[in-house]
Image (cartoon, rainbow, N blue to C red):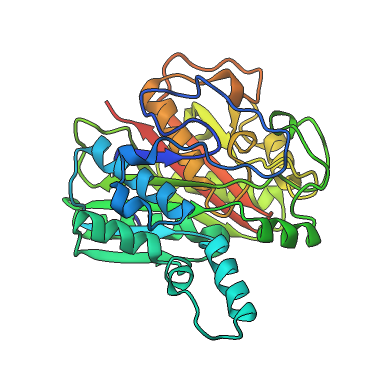
Length: 359
């Protein structure tokens, strides 16, 4: 997978934690006693005009706010392109549309539910709001959606590193998805304390949601958070050994060794049946490297890698690791230069992301 180094020059993220304020870093942690986590939101009127706000669904408000925060953080008014990603799209709006379709027998339907339920609704909304007429695309590839969108941006920056591309993700914790997930034993049945999901060895994870936007460029700026050095994807690795070999090969390609990694961010989901590869990997690779978990804060969803990338970027920029995410007793270094993010979705989609501090 050929890609270019790119810089994260701005971030905006809304999640089940208070992450929409970039000057804060998990200073307040919200604990949930339910298996469905929802976003903590600011006053939308601060970021979206009241006229526009009244027409938008909940998830469009969340996504538009995240994009607005990101552009402001990067000091960019109009990006050169917009690339968004989602696993299931706007399920609440789709459910409303299908329900109305049945109730009204396909007559006199409300077009709003259909329009706001399409996968590219957020990318189009952001483009119209900031008057961006450049490249616009949305990836809907389940557990690899965010990674594919990121790869698209990296390839475009390989061709022209002067571009500023707005990379986004969104997925919502819709009730209809939770019910469907229970049938596949994807989610836990009994109410679970979100901060204890790694202590309770039970089948299933907790459902999460969120929307994150990143301003990516081939050139650093005064607002740069960190650099993205490389990305690699694995589909259905047969064993932890195979995954470990792939990670070692990936690091070798980027001229670094396992001992050069300062922090490993692991996408452990708290699902005893689907985390087995990760549990075995921790015993054979990065044994002495400090580890961080994050899905007890945001839950599991298709584009949860974006939350992990926000966490990695924040650690590198702020040079601080909050206690709530620490997953090992190994001493964390005073200077954190390199972070490796390893995530999985339902033990099918595995991704590796290498990030470095910018100074």
